[in-house]
Length: 249
Image 1 (spheres, one colour):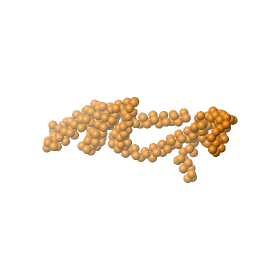
Image 2 (spheres, one colour; image 1 turned 90 degrees about the vertical axis):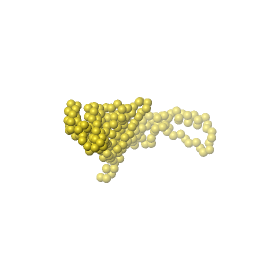
Image 3 (tube, one colour; image 1 turned 30 degrees about the vertical axis):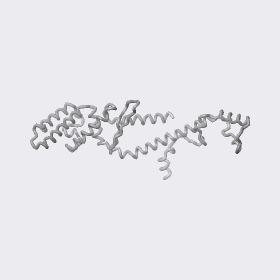
């Protein structure tokens, strides 16, 4: 059973690490920051036709803050609203576009926000968002599902089946071992059935039944299984996929 505990503990730790996805926003603020970045990404994509903010500024993905500032100054010289010549409607759109580039720069200069942007830039827009909140721990976080995760669904189903079958095999084996371990020799596992319509018991019959109840192991009374000696330790034969493949060859 110790192996099962360590196995599931490792799964939980791995899931928590993968769930961070880059960036370390406070749990309560994670959704607010993420939604701001996702909304800005959607607007910028409509205006510039790309989700790559580094491309818009003309810098690399590993650009430092000083490089980003220098790139923004060059961008401002070429695209400042004061230099715009055209209709008023187009001017407003141009100003909005320039303002959003400023928001891009502020995001990339913030390490935490930049980490979250890089996460969404790599994975794309989530197609599903779920917020998990544990009230008594004052903890809240969000989980996202992306199109890129869909090819992983068969693997998730496979791993889930393996984990459940492994846990079931271990539990059944432990129950069988406990049944054999705590089985008391010399104690009758059965007691004579009362004859039909008999409503009263003699003193000796009552004493026999009380002695039988006292002799029963409480664990086996509830969790004992038939033929515990036939339950084998978990092995490859415990897994459905292995049995299925073996049956085909």
